[in-house]
Amino acid sequence: MSRILLNGEDQITNPYKKNTHEALDIVKKRYQQDTIIAHSDGTVVMVQTKIPHDPGSTGNRSYGNFVKIKHQDGYYTLYAHLKEVYVKKGQKVTKGEKIGFMGQTGNAYGIHLHFEIRNSYDRRIDPTPYLDKDLPKNENKIYYQVYDNVKKQWLPNVAVNTGEYAGNFKNAIGGVYADKYKLRVHDLKKGYWLPWVENREDYAGNLGNNIDGIQIDNAIYRVHIKNGSWLPWVSKVDNTSNGYAGIYGKAIDAIEIK
Image 1 (cartoon, rainbow, N blue to C red):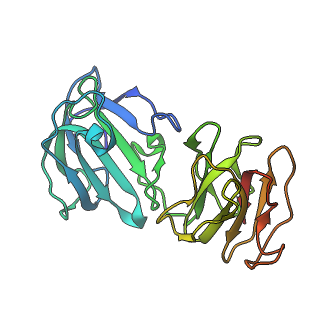
Image 2 (cartoon, rainbow, N blue to C red):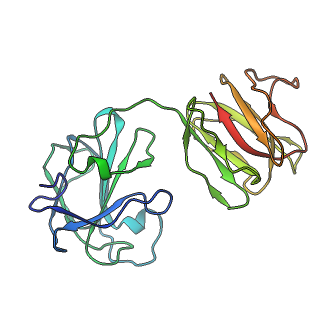
Image 3 (cartoon, rainbow, N blue to C red):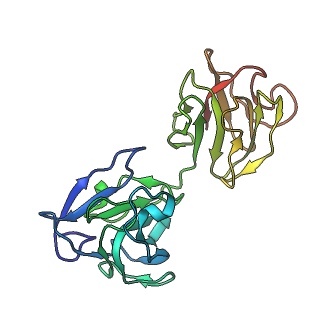
C-alpha cells in the first residue's frame, strides 16, 4: 500500500529527474484518483488554496492547491495540484491522516499528485526511495552552489568537505550561495569587492559578471581559474594576497570548500 494515497497503490507517471523534474507525479494504479494522506507525522507549514487549473503558470501558483508539511529532523513533504485541501497551516498531522484530494490545479496536465521531499535546507531530494519508507535522518551537511554565466543557471548544490566542487570548468561563475557561511566576491568587470552575504539570505555576485576573487569566513576554500588550474587552499580572510582565493583579472570557474 501507499504512504501517500489512502486507498491504492502508487503509479508513477513522471519520475524524478535532477534539475528538471525534482519530484514524482503519481496517480493511483490504473490511472485512478485518490485521497492524499500525510507520509509521516509533522506540522503543516504552508497551505495554498483557491487556485484553478492554470497551465503555464509559474512560481508557487504553478503548484496549484498544495500542502507542505515539516517532519522530524527538518525534512519536508509537499503535495501539489490538489483538488481539495483538508488541513490548515499550523495543524499537526499524523502519518496516514487525510490532507487533500488529487486534482489538476495550477500548472498541471491531467489529474495527479505532484509529490516532493525536501531536506532541512528546503532543497528537493529524490522521493523515490522513501515512497514506502521513513524519511531519511538529517546528516547536517552544509551545501553551496554557483551560478554558471554561460548556461545562465544555478548549478546543483554540493556538500562541504566531500571532495566535490561547484562549477563547470571553462564556464565562468557569476554568483555563489552558501549555507552557514559569510562570504563575498570580487566582481571582475566592476573591479571591486561586492557586499558580504550570509547563510543564503542573498547570493554573492552579479549574475552575468565574472568573479575573480572570493572570501569565505571561517572556512578552508580554493578556486579554479578558467582555462587554468586550482589555486592553493585559503584558510583566512584579510586584505593580503593570501586572504582571498583568486587572481584579479582572471575569471573563476569552480569553487571547493572543505
